[in-house]
Amino acid sequence: MADNARARKLADRIQVVVAETLDRRIKDPRLGFVTITDARVTGDLREATVFYTVYGDEEERAASAAALESAKGVLRSEVGRQTGVRFTPSLTFVPDALPDNARTIEDLLHKARAKDEEVREVSTGKTYAGEADPYRKPEDEDEDDASA
Image (tube, rainbow, N blue to C red; front, side, top):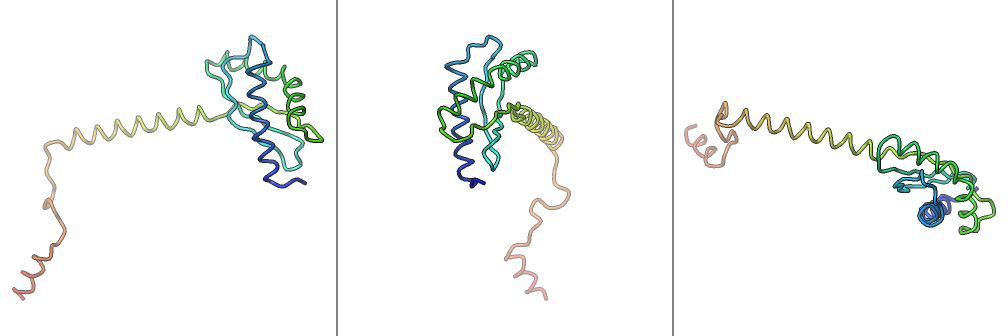
């Protein structure tokens, strides 16, 4: 079993090789604007999972997924040639959930801004229920000691 550092280095190298090969050698018209975001390799260096994102709508994502699956053999042979490991890991392509998570966070931030603006509008022209500064000050304590 390989150490984690070696698996991490191999994963980084696979990410670079796959991205460069997609850019230079794969000429599939179904392949849209694909970005390789991450790659992970199992501890035994036998399987690699490559995460990708596609800029575009759902139809372009499906077409790019089909193009990646059809180019898997070429990509695997290129990874084997450039990494020089004894056993070339099998590649699995997984769409990355990063854009969906980012969109969810942006929606939540937008809702928070809207709520803040609503609270700001309600609070304009209002005063505090008590004093403006509810904290004791040192001169107040001196007056309390003098009266006692």
